[in-house]
Every structure is written in C-alpha cells, then in structure tokens.
Length: 332
Image 1 (cartoon, rainbow, N blue to C red):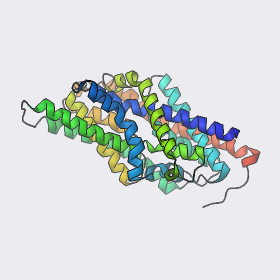
Image 2 (image 1 turned 90 degrees about the vertical axis):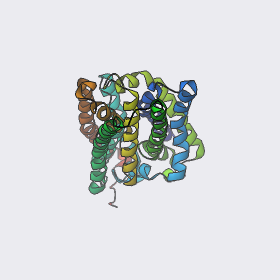
Image 3 (image 1 turned 180 degrees about the horizontal axis):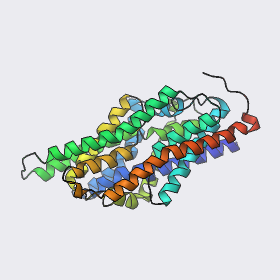
Image 4 (image 1 turned 90 degrees about the horizontal axis):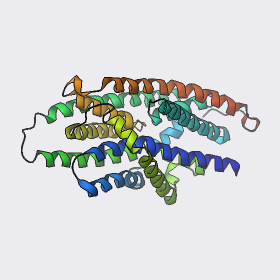
C-alpha cells in the first residue's frame, strides 16, 4: 500500500511539473498573440488538456510505450522501482537547473533518468532502441530551428494585403491546434507512461478514463502556475517576438514533433518550440535573437541528459541493493 501511495504521489507531482514546464510553453506564445481577445484566450487554455484526453484515444499510446520499453526492460518489481527512481531523478534535475535560472527539457531528463536507473539496477537496456530515441530527440529541435527559419523567411515573401493580419491569425490558430495534437500524441505521453506504471494497469492503453481526465486537469493547473515565467523565457528571453515569429515557430514545432511521432520516439515539445522561435526570428537577422538567452538554454540542454543519466545510474544501484529487489533479472 505504501509503495502504491508513493508511486501515485510521484505521478501526480510529475504531471504538475509537465504542466508547468511543457504546458506553460504551449500556452505562452499563444496567449502573446495580439489578436483574438478573451474567447481566443480561453480556447488556447482549453485546447492542450482537451487534446490530452481525446487525441491518444484516437491515435494511440505508442510513444507512452516507448518510455516503458525502449529505455530499459522495466519488468517486475525491480523494473517498477527503477522507473520510479528515474522519474524522481528527472524531477530533481529539472528542479535544480530551473532554480539556477536554466529551465530545461523534462523529456530529456526523463530519458536520461530512466535509462540510467535501468542500467544501474541491472536491467537489460535495448541499446539500439535507446540510440534511436536519442537520435530522434536530437534531430527534432534541429528540424524545428530549420523549419522556423524557412517559414519565417518565406512568410515575408508573401505579398502584403489588408487581410494579412487575419491570415496570420488564422495560420496561428491552425498551427497551435496542430501543436496541441502533436504534444498529445508524442511528448505528453510521458505522463501516461508514468501514470500507467503508478496505477499498475497493464499498459498505457488500459488507462481508465478517470485518470485521463485527472491528468488533463493537473496538467492545466501546472501550466497556469508558471505561465508568466515561461512566457518571458520564450518571448523576451530569447527573441523579440512578433506575430509572424509566433505562427512560424508553432508550425515548425508541430511539424517536428508530429514527424517524430511517426517513428514512435519521444521528443521535447519545449525544445522544438524554442528552436522554432529562434529560427523564425533569426530569419529577419541575428539582432532579432537574444543570443545570451539561447546559449543559457543550450547549456541547460547539454547538461540535462548526462546529469540525469548519472544520477539515475546511482539511484539504480540503490534499487539493486534493496534486499527485496536483489533477485537476478532475466534477460528478455
């Protein structure tokens, strides 16, 4: 009973942090768009949790299964304990870096924490699958950066008309909707992986509807708690944002994350979106980008994966030393 309570408590905290880290990033640029008023603002806040409830039911939980099968073989009590240790390590790494003014990717931390904990706990690690996850994760922000630049440059070649503000706003609405769908079918599924392990269901497809609704509500609550800070980082912290930058960045991030979903690999929406913002702004000249903020963000990303993996490995060794979990683990 105590184990279940601890795991569910970590799951609740994890979803809240996902909201504060990922959800706030989704909302921050959308709410900075200078058109739409109150109705558009409410729609922007409702779309991410709505997508989290509906999109996986329609498109599946393939990426959630990647978190539980492609980072380490997480079978049996030791596998569950290693998974829990990896998630806790990810939360610690993100919390420490954020406290130092270096907000980072929770997805990177989770990948590093779980794979490191699995290795330390003596579990089998599917290196080829893990390598493909890491390669896709590295490629997604690069794609977001390139697409953001190309979209930003291409948008300025469109002949100006009196309808241009309305066209840009319509593009923003479509891109933001696609972004929410992309998050729900990819990056957001790390929450379903954690919840499925915490509740002991057979797998992500077995998550009860009540848990889906709870995840969406907790995610929205977490997003609202850090919306202002994340908005500053994505906006004035990185670039001098304009409507065309926002629409281009949202489109680039949605395309990068949706493309990664085809491969079944989890990637970071915050990384892809941040890269898209920088790319779109850079298309108007280097002075549009606040390079110190970009360097700080890049440094946090570089530190996150190895630090989470090392701490996860240490936590996995501790799991392996527990008498109740010390029995050998069979190879798959």
